[in-house]
Length: 403
Ligand code: PMP
Image (cartoon, rainbow, N blue to C red; front, side, top):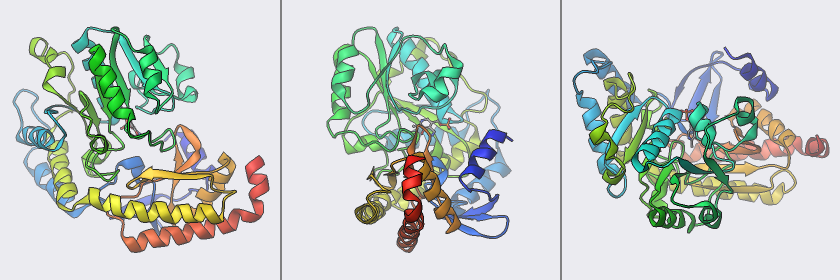
């Protein structure tokens, strides 16, 4: 394993080994149960080991798990049809791969070949994955600098301000890539007019709009896809994480016909051996079915308000330890004054069996992204534990803020 990761987890006091899980609960090897508010960074929308999704995986495993790559397979066709039905506007073609970073890599290549242009506009604080292309459009120097030089012709602008995009937009731009809500950047919700303004700028200049819904997609923010809050239809949408139902890895790029014509002349221009395999696709189709039939987006919207308001009340009482609470649906960020305060809180929460971690590009924000199947009683318990954790660190606060 990665010894650095083990060290980082131990540093935050997260020193248990997980064994299994159900719904919003992780169980460690000792049998301790934790309410998981880290949610696999967005993977566990339908909960751990969702019985319908696991059952569908078993069925498909018995029938055909990997495809010949020579013939089409039925689960892949069915998943593509389902995504065409569920995604907004005329998003209707799908390319399948195995992770979020791969979906981003594919979208960047698609945008370049479709437009014949080199340039991509992205945002500071963005997280799009850690493969070289995805890293090139991500926005944190810590992860980028050791691997420089990255892809050329990438421009980063501040997130949430369409005017900054307008300043660098021209007819060399292939695409603007954006998270509808920045996840790893610290759960940053942009102003309502942001995505519509980006859509307008892309239309004006013949550039594509790529929505990275790897973390926000599949119900997390209170709608099936976060772009639905603004009514904007992107040209390409990247999906992964919860698309796999917490059971299989899968990634996808879903595109509009107008952004997909390059495949007509170059059908093999971008391929993936395992992408579109029947097992992952069958699981993903069931994951979408569960998400829609159990109305998980609505659940995220309702329970999200309870959690957000509860945390905001705690911010009122513990205003030195919590400097902001923000988010949408069950994608919530709790901002703290220093990484030291965050680390101490994460450790105190863990000791009381609530799992939470920092966002990757901002170690002053603790994310709260539990599975959407979390219960109202569990949300109450999480809030109670937060209150205890905040009380526990209060005597050390001066040191923690400075340190
Ligand atoms: N895009 C976004 C918005 C993400 O949050 C992530 C993962 N945190 C990725 C892409 C990369 O996904 P993966 O780790 O599956 O490569």
